[in-house]
Image (cartoon, rainbow, N blue to C red; front, top):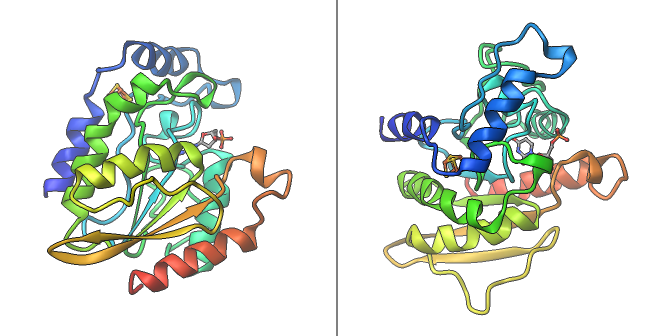
Length: 231
Ligand code: DU
Ligand code: SF4
């Protein structure tokens, strides 16, 4: 209930003028292949059950992916790679994610991003990253009773997520741990069980087409984090 309400509030956010313009312009002009789509054109909330034990944190919705379909990593190449891997390790009901009525279910996993609007060139500004952080903080607070592990995709997500975990009540070591594929940090939670933070190269084509991130590498991190989370 709390998370569903948060998702609705996020979808109405207009705090970043540049991103509001961009998400709406992309939704108007579209890509030829999606000419018959009514693009979402709004902030894309997280996706997955409110009692998730594992949270996956990306970068931002893709202009013709999440910004078109309204669901994280849905309808873009990055999502093709991510959802196939989630299915392969038993965390998703199907290997593909095409649109919001495709029946996809995630098992104990919530997929979200530190920036909820599609940015030009997939590059949010530091100001946009900071403006969006309160949404991630609130999401993490709502997940806190159940979430035990996080997979952070890429350095941008890592830099945005560490302060968000700190604000949401976990203890983040100082100096802040540096992002890397396979990096694993335990965040203490004072009054509760710790959370295992796992770095993973981002699932973007830049990494997957070049072999910097292979499907096996992705499955390994997901399996490790899911096991740590009790999934
Ligand atoms: O190449 P692409 O699948 O269109 O994704 C573009 C860009 O956005 C890439 O860096 C991945 C990132 N991304 C994300 O972080 N979260 C999403 O839900 C979709 C894409
Ligand atoms: Fe709001 Fe975040 Fe979108 Fe900025 S990026 S307009 S803070 S939802």
